[in-house]
Length: 142
Picture 1 (cartoon, rainbow, N blue to C red):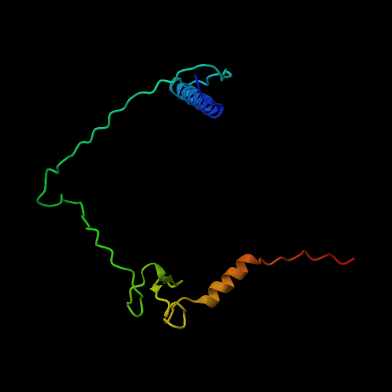
Picture 2 (tube, rainbow, N blue to C red; picture 1 turned 45 degrees about the vertical axis):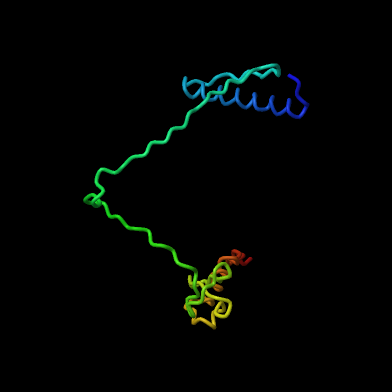
């Protein structure tokens, strides 16, 4: 077929994958387990079907208003990222705090923006989860 060794190997692997896929689909469709037969490398042709893609545009029947019972919520335009304290635009350089807000470089620390997140209990919970209490059974007295 006038191919280099690399292209020939790729073609053989694609043929094996196509045969495995076809046999698995056949077993699913027929509802039985097909016995897998070893694939012998050779000159095999793989049929490829052409698919035409068509797009269909549909106009809604009721353009005047939404139908009853369906709530239509328009998606608002998402504005630029701003610091929650000074309202300065931060863009990609904003810092997300554990309290859930976005801050600029000046207000990124919890003492600079009156943070409501409780770091102490979060740290206690993390330590308690990482270090479970291990108690050994008491030995009986002799």
